[in-house]
Image (cartoon, rainbow, N blue to C red; front, side, top):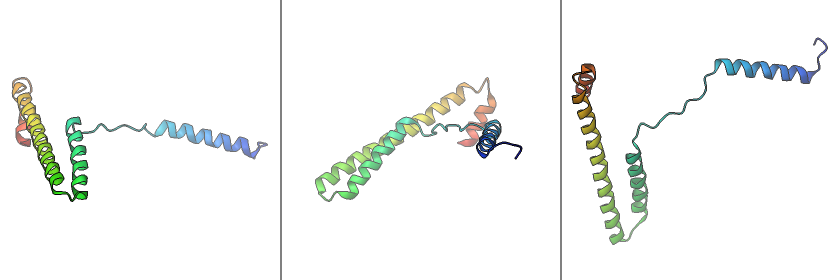
Amino acid sequence: MQGKDIDNILSLLTKICYETCKKHIPKKRTNTSKIPRDRKIIMIKRHKLQTKLKNTTYPPVRVQITEKLRELEEQMQKSHKEQQRKEEMQAVSNIQQNSKFFFAYARKN
């Protein structure tokens, strides 16, 4: 092996592999969540309440939990409607400058 001991050959091989990988493999990208933060919080709360509801047998507590679940569902619907309203206002305001955006919005909805 050309007068080199095994440790030197191994370190050379790992160095070459590392440099090759660094050159050709892209860095890991972090994906941003597509779910808005407020809705994500509502979904977590809803999940916790559903678990409590499943484990609770006492009727007055079940009624309270179902009422809270109903309120969370209303908040979720309100959040969806607010987002749709914002998207619609953005599409209408951009109709003069960017008609493609408006027609893409119209096709989507």
